[in-house]
Length: 611
Image 1 (cartoon, rainbow, N blue to C red):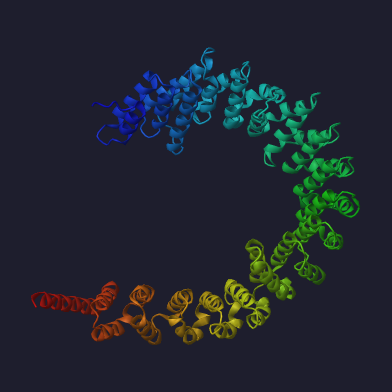
Image 2: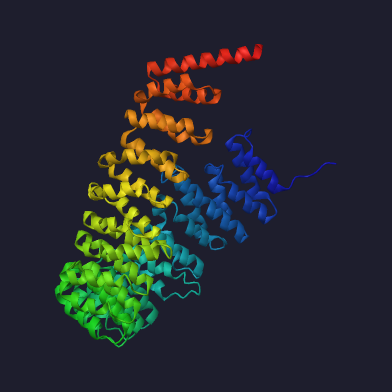
């Protein structure tokens, strides 16, 4: 019975076939795009074009944007975008032709895929620059989908689309249930400085949503693209009648670092809306140390007196962003560390970290905070102490205790403790050495971990304690001590003798790490080579690989011991492995011994076969 293969299977076989030339594949797919009756088959052909395409194929995809089925149009647009991305930023020679075809669709008021055409042009930069006039014209169309797609692409084109600003500004009046009207806001922000006058005019609109979107657009420009007229307009808009607009304007002041708006932001700290006050505080923090002289008193007042904890929270964060210029805020931030609201305590710790005043009272207060009931506040306190570095040495013991408590509870929070100890450096060693003597195995493990993170020669003072830790009853502690010694480098060579017994440790992780550490510290010394060879002999075949690798890395220093082991070894597989190590070492003496071993193995094998 003759079975007819379905069209999708035919196309799949076509794309997977190596017999057909690429151009032939494309022609088959183009034919499917144009003639298949089922929309699903045409849509599938569009997707498959990504794997086999040329100029004719891409132009066929462009033509498919006019397909009556939205699924086909969507797949065609996606395929064009995917093909462009596969070009790795290099404009293909046929991109201008593709742009011209897309523009023809834009101009065809009867074509169903005009919005897809406008959207696809955004992927054909810089060739799509020639389409700017047509995209601007599309902004006047009655079809909202088309206007949104055109706005998106004009934003991608950036400042070169400056002629679109009046219509894009008018587009801020658009309303879309799916919030796609944000593309108008984003486009104005991406166009940058040329769009500022048009956006400023929008603040005069009686429509609240337009003024709100104008503030968002200015905020998207960031500090590099802000202009004096934008800062002046934002400062004026801080007095807007609508609280949502005032809040958005305050955020935009922070994002653009609009220093001329500082006086207005300070006044806004007295706004009737707590949300607006919080955003004004945040904006003063974003503007940063340059405005500290003016903003510090107002932020301090907000931290101390505002009735809303959310405002005080943002004031504390803002003070931290002012940096050392806000050192006078330390007493108020210390008071906030004791607040009943954990998020305010968190913000106060963050503020102290930013101010960087690592005085004794601050260090002791943050060390005490490590015992707080709220985990997020604890890790923020640990992060602040870590930022202080050696100045936080008096908190080392408290950090180790906090690391122990949080290690089993939340690894992310314990991370901050152990790295704070590492940041304190050599000054944390006494507390960490004491930790290695603790009765709690988990705390000993944490102490060894922290010592392993100290930069050389920070942990040198702990050499004796780490060496002693190699005998710990806990395998995890033994492993961490070995790793810490390995990170000390040459300073840990005196510990090689204590590390050697760990090669035969019953715990595989301890053994593996010991082998690696010993190898790095002195794999070429006779003592280490001999110990490695003996350990190799006594290990199971599956466990010999690591030791063998270290012997190969020892190069000529390991050759005499390997040759001697080869002479005494009777197991054929072990002899083959030893010969392999010698062969890898590759010195004349090693190669000669390896060749002799292979010959003996061949003779013995031949003798056994004959027998």
